[in-house]
Image (tube, rainbow, N blue to C red):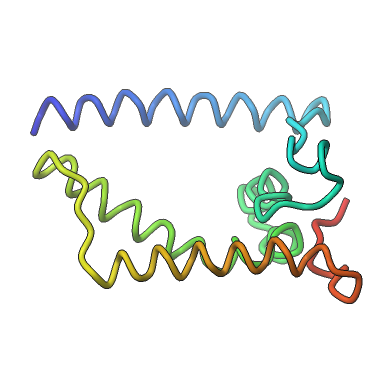
Length: 132
């Protein structure tokens, strides 16, 4: 268990450091990594607007975060719940296990994201596109 906790802690520190560095680059230069899906197809993917959403959350601007990616803003507590549960199982027992409810929730969230990815590109739903 200690080995897995150390492994996770190291990965978490690296991930947080990379996130802070990326946040600083975006904040000071305005340069952000473009969405490859959008560059190739011209359509918004379900994840378009996540960088803006996260930077608004860090500034405690929840309205702005919601405007960047409405669906991910709403379902992110469920995603964090699932990640936390998987992480606990990995650190404590050495395996990533989910109960039936969690598996169903995962598929429901994926379905919501797929539908959102299509709907946000339809003309009557321009308001679902990330602003900016």
